[in-house]
Image 1 (spheres, helix red, strand yellow):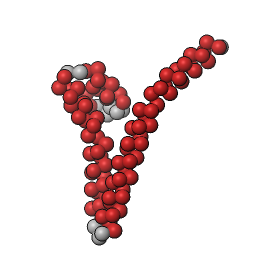
Image 2 (cartoon, rainbow, N blue to C red):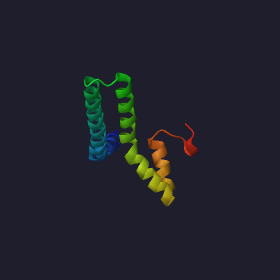
Image 3 (cartoon, rainbow, N blue to C red):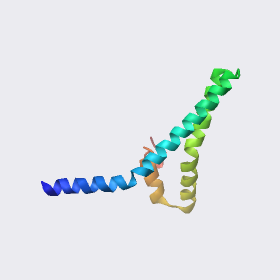
Image 4 (cartoon, rainbow, N blue to C red):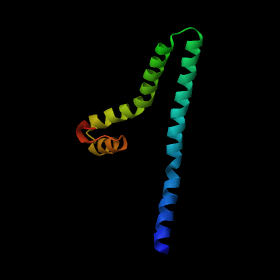
Length: 100
């Protein structure tokens, strides 16, 4: 019983060491979201059509969030780094060969 709890505690401690990466990733996404929301609200306040502003915001948000991982995946593909590509597919919730 003690071994089980000790093992779980050690796993929890290892996870804590790396949670800063998760926090930083989430915070970065929230900052981007907030910036683009403010940009869209400003455009709307200046008379831009709401639908146009929202579509542009969605496009820009998608591009900003996808650019870094897409760049690294492209580099991994060029290097033939199958391990990275498989890990990325798992992290992104994709199946092998692009099947969703």
